[in-house]
Length: 400
Ligand code: XMP
Image (cartoon, rainbow, N blue to C red; front, top):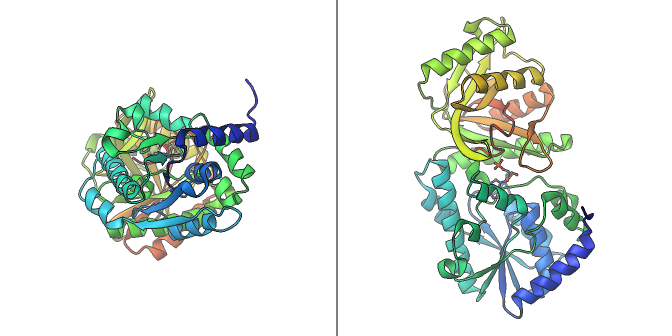
C-alpha cells in the first residue's frame, strides 16, 4: 500500500474542494472533534471567507466547549471566523421524552439538518461541508448505527430534503490520517491529538430520556473523567449517565450473581446485581444490537467495595456475556452511596486504533477511585459510579 502523504493529500483536497464549491458560499458546522475542526481549516484554505463556520450549541456539548473552539479557530494562525448559534431549546424540545437509542439518533439527525438548513438559508449557502470520514460510512452502511452525518448512503437526498449539496473532503481518510492533517495545519495538540467526540455529543451518553438536569450532571462527570484520564492517554474516555431504575430479570440476575461470586471467590450474598431499565447498544457479527446493562456491586467482608486487578473483572465480564447473550454491557461499582438517588454514572475508557474494535483500558484503581469520589462529591444526585468492563465487540464505544 502506498504510504499516506498528508501534504499531497491536502494540496489535492484543497484543489478538489475549490472546484466543487466554485464561487458559492458554503457552511460548515464544528463539533469540537478533530474531524470537523480539521475539515473547517482545510475548507477555509480552499475558499477563504466564502466559508461560514458555525458551532451549533445544541445542549449536548461539553463544559465551555463552544466558546473554547470558537476562540481557537477565530484567532491566528487559523483566522477562521466562527459563530456560536444557540439552538439548545430547539434540540431539547425535539428530543424530549424520547428514550429509545435509535429514535434519539434519528431525531438528533433530523433536527441537526433542519437547523443547518435554516442556517444555510439565512447565510445564503447552497453547500454544506462535512468532516465525514471512512469509519462513519463503513459503520452506518454496515448497520452498526445511524451515524449522524451520513446522508446519501442512508438514501437521503440532501438537495431535495434540506436544500444543500454536501461536500466531504475527508471522506477517504481514517482517523489517524485526519490527525496527520491537523498536525500539518498546526492545530494545537489539544485538537490534533484529541479523543473523538461524536456529532450527537452527550446525547448518546445520556441513556434513556434527555433532561436538562441529567445533562448538567453528565457535563460535570465528563469534565472530571476527562481531566483525570487525559494523562493516561487512552484512545477514548468519557462519562455516561443512566437513570437509576431497574428492570426485573430475576433469572439473569441470579445467574450473573452466581458467576461473579464463583469467579471472584466471594460469597454470593456479597454480590449485588442490578439490571438497568434502559438498554445499551452493542455489535454482533458487524450488526447493531441492544442488550441489557448489568451493574455489579461486590463487597468485601468488611463492607467495602471489592477491588481486584482489572483483567480479572474484564474476564468476568466476558464470562457473564457468554452465559447471558441478552447482556450487552457489564459495569463494576467503584463507589456507591447507601441512599437511592436518581442517576448512576459510568466511566468508559478504551484502547483502539480504528474505533471498529476496542479494548477496555487498564486504569489504576487509585485513578478510578479519585474520579468516583470527585463525581460523588460534585454530583449529589448520583448513587453509584461504575467502570464499564465491556470491549467492542460485544459493546459499542458509545452507549447508544
Ligand atoms: P461506536 O459507539 O459506534 O463508536 O463504537 C465508534 C466511534 O465513532 C464515534 N461516534 C460518532 N461520531 N457521529 C460522530 O461524529 C456519530 O453519530 C457517532 N457515533 C459514534 C464514537 O465516539 C467512537 O469514536
